[in-house]
Amino acid sequence: MFGDEFIQRALFGAPIILFSLTVHEYFHAWTAYRFGDTTARDRGRLTLNPLAHLDLVGTLVMVLSQFRFGWAKPVPVNPYNLRNRRFAHFWVSAAGPLSNVGLALIAGFLYRVIQGLALGTWPVMHFLTIMVSINITLAVFNLIPLFPLDGSHIFKYLLPEELEPKLAQFDRIAPFILILLMVTGVLWVFLWPPVVAVIRLILGG
Image (tube, rainbow, N blue to C red; front, side, top):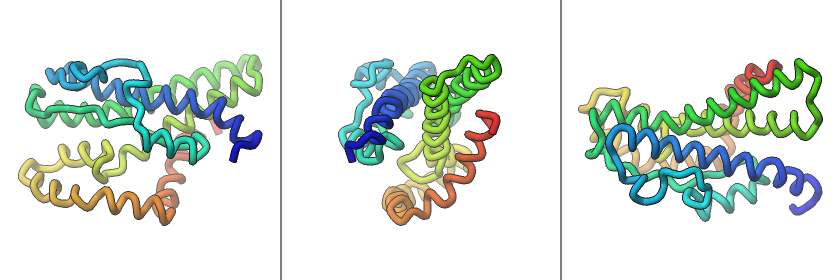
């Protein structure tokens, strides 16, 4: 487990995934704050300090997956503090995945510019490739409409309000469905094709 490949992934993957997760959670907190909810700020989560967002199990999974995947602590949001609750909650939920798409686009832009100028060294190009890959994976994964992922909240607020009680009942079993799909590998069968397609699009093939 701790061979050369693991060390290489740690050197490149660990800082990227920590930074990407931190930005993801920060923008959840920032968007909630902009819509009037100070809960995340009051609990010290409106920060780019990764230590404020680390989750013990998510960090362990990050190491065991050789820095391909992981998660941070969910940002606390009180929807009753939000102005225009349904509209605001939609954007609070979408802010995390959108921040990862933004990071991927920035890294992809730098990749293309450096490649076009023939200035890139392997470590730089490899770093930017992993930055794109991790952030697109995080964005697509979090858009899956299963609780507790962001996609479940986005999906909820796209539907009529009267369906919320039924969706709340489904949310009780959604985490178990998500775990089952991940453990059996079924999730990745459907997840990887769009992830790879978007990565190739951003990096120019």
